[in-house]
Length: 70
Image (tube, rainbow, N blue to C red; front, side, top):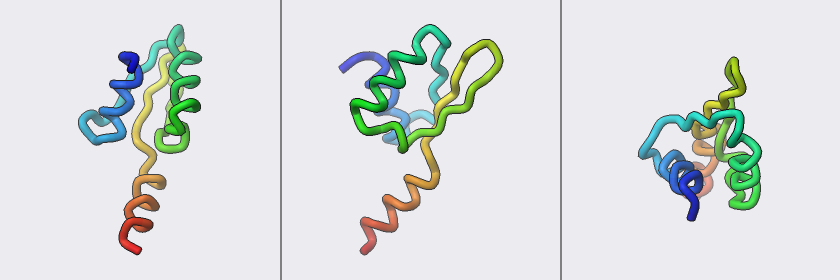
């Protein structure tokens, strides 16, 4: 597991609120998110200078909770 995988796993587990990804790592991170199936579980917000801030997707989180209740 790479450092980015560990970092995003912490985000998805709720251990951290957001992850800042610098421009030079964006494509590597995106590839990881796609390969792991995490792309729709997070929301990326592009900032000035190429930094992307990822947070958990509240829509995915809520729908996951509703599915487990049924």
